[in-house]
Amino acid sequence: MRVYLDNNATTPLHPDVIKAITDFLPYYGNPSSLHETGRDAKEKLYSSINSISEFFGCPREDMIITSCASESNNIILKSFMNKKYDFRPHIIISAIEHPAILETAKYLESNGFDLSLAPVNEDGVVEIETIKNLIKKETVLISVMWVNNEIGTVQPVEEIGRLAKEKNIFFHVDAVQAAGSIPISFKDLPFDSASISAHKMYAPKGIGLLYVKNFAKRKKELTPLIHGGHQEGGFRAGTENTIGIAAFGAACSALSKEMEKNHAQEEKIRDHFEDRVQKEIPHIIINGKNSKRKVSTSNITFKYIEGESILLRLDLHGISVSTGSACSTGSLDPSHVIMALSDDKERAHGSIRFSFGRENTMADADYTVDKLKETVAFLRSISPLYKGE
Amino acid sequence: MDTNWAYNENVKKHFMTPKNMLAGAPEDYHADGEGSVGSPACGDMMMVLIKVKDGRIADFKWKTFGCASAIASTSALSELVLENGGMKLDDAYRVTPEQIIAYLGGLPANKIHCSVLGDKALQAAIDDYYKKNNLTNPIKKAESPIVCQCLNVSEEDIRMEVLEGATNWETLQERTKIGTVCGKCQENAKQIQANFVKRYYSEKTYNPDKEA
Image (spheres, rainbow over the protein chains, first blue to last red):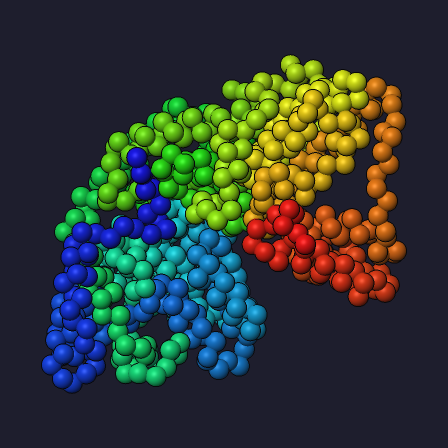
């Protein structure tokens, strides 16, 4: 039995996406070409782009198609490096950002920026007051993720956005984990920009989105990462990833129809899973449980044992999960997210993320709990830290 | 070694079906010697319990908190020590991380630091046995040449730090403060560190059996 519970890492292709890719394959033309082969490809992409635009509630002219959310995040942050300042610019990001923001912000810091990492409370949420207190007159950018990838906690991005607007500070949102889970209408949200990755929503890797509010006006404030072509309004050069766009469009159309149903099903499965784990496995912590979470994410610390050994034993039972333990990466530093909400290395080392998706069933959850019970009991029986019930 | 799983088949076997682990509470085992090393904050901790008979390790039990390679390497160590009627205490005291890694058929280079703990826990257990019986350990801890005279950092200290992941000079200095007083040893120390880094990390998998 194979049970894939790592949907926050990436998702399987939606059947509609597979069909869209297959259907698009003969359209090899370059959409920039004037001839019929090129025009056919371009024509075929229109409806895909429209589906993306509709799904995210943003006008085509405010969308920049990129290769991934990391690229989108890099464009925004690095644009701030290319501006001239007569003061030391200050940026605020949350302490639990994805490395695509965290590392890029640190790169800005190494280039002279003043960087503040906004701490989170013990429930894994950045409080609006925290952001308020960090704002200085030199603050030029705030970047906070909508949904945390490791523990699924939903951040108060709308409140932060309104605050940023009031203070006239640019506000960027890494919306990767929200896409396909929370209904989004960018034009109605107080975000200046946001990034999306298609492979977290049943489309393939290699295609992403950057949304910039009033892009036409803002364009001169931003700097492209890739120069050399007229694509995406001359802002993001490179021949379009046509198959990727077709796939992304198909994922958007499919999800616009079934997101609600998926959401309900994932919540039911996740709740059943957590109920059983709580009842049947002692000494656990459900990370972020007290805050609003993405319904498909469950991050649990199993005390007295280490995450990589749980992950690998589950893997040999056909179950795919991920861990915040350092041992999985070979470094000595465990998950910065679990550390941010607890400052407890043991809690981070023993954490496992289960992220459900549209293909998961109740039977998957039950099978996983059964194997998990066995695995946790065995690893505890050989752990010098575990002293019994 | 080339498997698409995280570790080789032998590591997988020791991880999934480890040998000689202690199932119950350490108190109930009545060990002749007991040693623990590591800490939960670092992600690895090992406890070794031994019974000694006629100068040999007659029984070896362990508990490990840690990743798959930490569990597999303690299991491998237990087999290594109990082979052929049990190792003599002085041989057991001299078991090196290299022997454990070779017994497992190699470990990923970034995982070496995990298995270094098994031999240390065993040494601690043997020391504990001698102490409990008012005996002196006949094996003097190997004298290792001092590299940093100011702060008394030896070649062995550098080797251990490299095994635990100090592969660049800044990390080594942060952990040992080596060369921060007079600084005269820096060049030599950097060379010694570089040699160890080359030895342990030049391949993705470190297997002492394949060393030239």
